[in-house]
Length: 143
Image 1 (cartoon, rainbow, N blue to C red):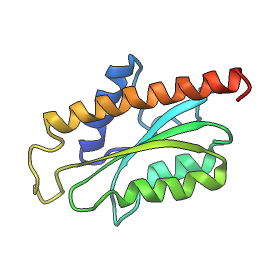
Image 2 (cartoon, rainbow, N blue to C red):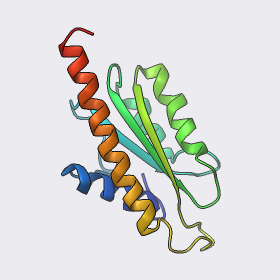
Image 3 (cartoon, rainbow, N blue to C red):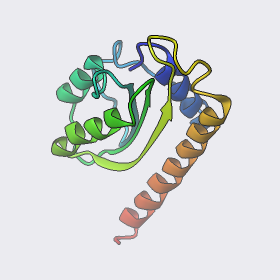
């Protein structure tokens, strides 16, 4: 979920790197059957956006591998920790998280997320994909 566009930029960088489509939880009510998802949000009063919180509440995450990402114009990744706290009781397996600076409502931190931060988001996407594939291989091998 992205109110200012920061998280959307990161989501699109991750999606492009993985050759998938980034989707907005505002428009998507149900989680697909995929066992692996990325969820991201900006920081609003130290929490993820309300639309994402509602999306998490209405969907089943049991056994799903979830990679989290967040942006904030003034926080320190508190929305990512808050997402994790919402997802763990729902059975989600948090496999990693990413945070980067975003610009704020008051136009502080213009130019964020930067090209370097977006490159780091793409790197994070690849690391999560490798982690997912490794875990799936271990499950298949009975480890």
